[in-house]
Length: 213
Ligand SMILES: [Mg+2]
Image (cartoon, rainbow, N blue to C red; front, side, top):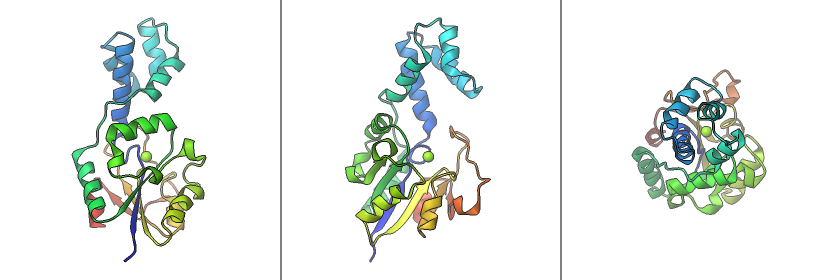
């Protein structure tokens, strides 16, 4: 029987990125010494203001936008996987599947998330690709070729949330593609007005539904 390989996206797939944002805002509120700034920043974000500039102005901070952005990106996030997600990863792993992670982003930011979630429990180091470290991002063929070279005879399934880049290349390779529908909390809206080849073959509302496909 062919090996089954699951390639997961990270942000807004294995967890909701809004949780990372809240964690960062909490950290910033603590560092600037204004706990109440957490609510202010969250409101400002929801109103699509320039959050960091607004918080600097409101509390007359000596920080620059760049410094707050650095805290946002580099802080050790206080976040965890939802139980459903952990259970799904457990079940896939127990079935003998190989779990891979393919994520666009900064090395430190993504590594901090991986550590917070304890993803090494399911994903081997060599099966984690972060665009800043790898030199290529989605939908570059290089990202997928890396996993093809590691598992030449496997049957691949890609799970992501972003039709702009998550499914195009896997579709071309004839792989299974699964899109996690947004729950209204996604930081980036899903743009479904893309050519058909960008869309996933299946859509799910919850990662536990992968088992059905
Ligand atoms: Mg994503």
